Length: 494
Ligand SMILES: Cc1ncc(COP(=O)(O)O)c(C=O)c1O
Image (cartoon, rainbow, N blue to C red; front, top):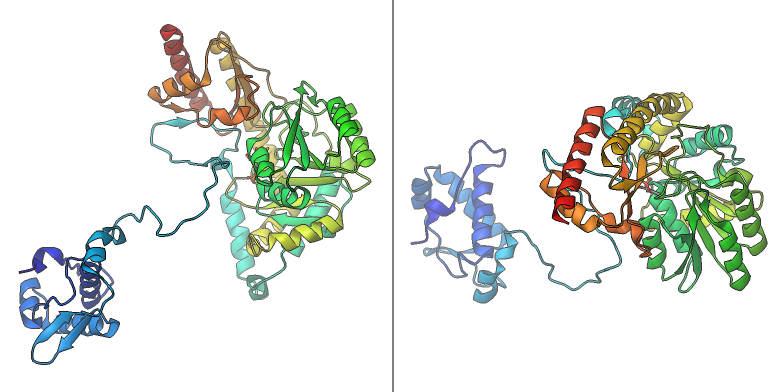
């Protein structure tokens, strides 16, 4: 006899009624071939006795199975697994993935080897090096939640819950226009602003609208890997120019412009990603003049504008753009926390209109309530207070991090103290390799992550970014200890 007692397990503590628990378990047994079509099920009284449940529960279960077509009832004979179920003996038995992990799809699809996997599975006790992100423990989550809740209880809120514009919440666009005009010297109105889910969406939209196969985009020889990959996905040609202590070497861009038409330059002007240097004033003006003369776009990714320790923030290229050449991209994801997906793309109206249309096909609209909450958070001055608060903390962390690096690891790494941002650009001495350091670090409870992405152009600079902002002082001490232990083991093995 089929082992009903061990195969059917009911739990009275669950909310799901017993008859449904039973029916669902029968369905699984039929689906995975354990009860094949034509099998006679136990009579309701016998099964009820066996499982120590009321007979009515079994009757209700069989009625449910009958209704769904899994069983058939033959008068005076009993209840049988439906012989007309389109389950062959073979498929039923090999169909075990139905209840397991569903690891493989039953259809083919296009895989894309050009994309980096963003896997973040964190294990207790292990430290994960990041690229320069904020400390989410300092994020004003409760404050934002309070504003969100207050907004959600307003009478007018149902209109914001409806399908709306793809440009993003109007109030946030207005508040941002004022805020960015006052703090970053922009001269824009809400019509120049598209709210995005973060900077990456701005990069993606720009790339879709600017680039086609073989179009040329200029980036630094070191560059933000996700931007490179986004451009390559358009089959554009990436031309790389030198990056020195003053950022992109704009003279090289001029040379390129004289030879061929370029569509765009991608620049992280405030703190070059990954090396953290600032694009000098002279190069900013030069780049803007070139864009005007040769009619190309400047994608200015101002991902961490707010964090400057040695000087006042430098006004973005966008604040000097009189000819509509700059697409200015930013977000609150670095300033507040990555989980708050609120960003912006600011450009000429025609570009913003097109980007807004396109955005609707990858993400119909943003989170209108969250956008409204951020409008209030910015307007009330709370964003600025938050920035002032965390800046002090990050400055201390930068100093401790750099001091410990210098005191303990100068034999292994070269670095400059970053003037802003949340990461240090760390170059490993040439006799060592990041591949070995990363492998060894794991043994010391430190995960270095995707170190390869910092050298997609294969320049062999041996550098990676290490974020300092998200660790407390004690965590920084621990991280450096682990790095010291790693480096010592590597040196010994050489
Ligand atoms: C240079 C740069 N641009 C853009 C982004 C993406 O930011 P967001 O989270 O706002 O999409 C990052 C994130 O690390 C970044 O480092």
